Length: 118
Image 1 (cartoon, rainbow, N blue to C red):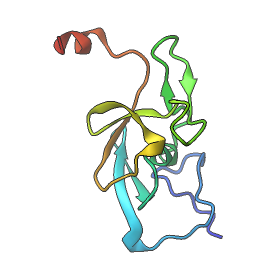
Image 2 (image 1 turned 90 degrees about the vertical axis):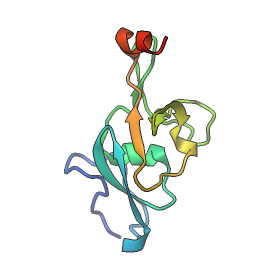
Image 3 (image 1 turned 45 degrees about the vertical axis):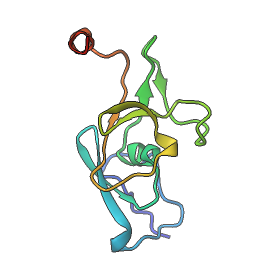
């Protein structure tokens, strides 16, 4: 089994592929908070965020509490992220695609950004 971490940075590994398989043709590159991350075709967006080495997946709007994916089947909503500019997507239910831009949701948006949308 290959114990080499699959995330983009040499930080502590929080998520590791169990089988260690994958061919060169099956890899995709997505960005998580602007950082390129290689994932395997079929991996979820939630897996890509964890492979990026983020200790906290997202933060709640009220209380700014840390959250990480819990159920991995779309029930708990702790995997919410922004995907290609669309907020509040369930990362555990969306397959990663080449070039996808993923941003973690970290608490309340800035007041200026909210006022610009009015």
